[in-house]
Length: 303
Ligand SMILES: [Zn+2]
Image 1 (tube, protein in one colour):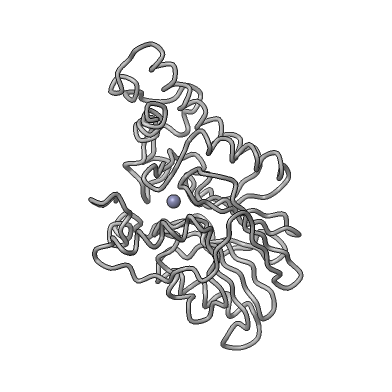
Image 2 (tube, rainbow, N blue to C red):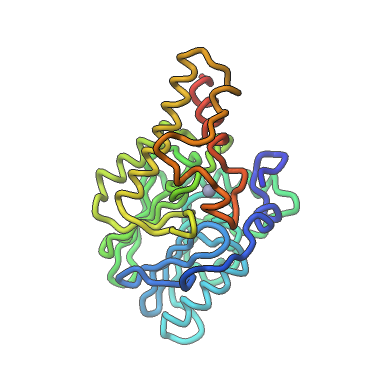
């Protein structure tokens, strides 16, 4: 799924995300009108109130259409939502390829400024062309809006899975969409070409755990579609990243080669991350412990 230019192409992603059987309804509310849609690609977060809606990420056109139709039905004002806002957590195509479906009804499409840059580069390099819609609103540190009686804030805490990951906080519901800052029980994709940093990623998760200890979290991806969770799940993923980084640091200090360091079957203590095909049959067979360790090695050995 990593194209020759290092980008995730829409065609490659569509092939990598076949529709799969869900254990529960793909469209479900968490609390206070905030919910998720689980499908191929990153989990979509949504807020639905009378006449208005806010969406976090857009997956692919077919599922974006289904989410828009369902939010329109829930808005209870007829065939069109009065005000809809779309926020992209980051630029990857499994989170933005459905943007074009929302464009005709979206009052705003919001991205962090580094996400917008990466999205533009991805679209410019894509072959075949990507049918997506770009941001019309960007932010540096934070951006907020009110939807009904809910306050929604997008925040940037630093490089992590990419160089431009935003989290989206539904403040009164106390629900936070973390985008791909957590792969729940799955080895993550570390997009160094787009500015990812495992060290910074760990620090970002520390900040989130400090500031939002009692929130309900939405994750972009999870083993067996476990894309919601709590503080313990975020901490567990932080510990996985830390263990991977420490393994590589110890290997470098001991004078071992990159090939020796990344040749590890499982991180001790993290057995549930060990078998990506078992944990996440729908996608990401190439996102393995070896990928994470290679990214950590490059990060630790590149100035
Ligand atoms: Zn991603």
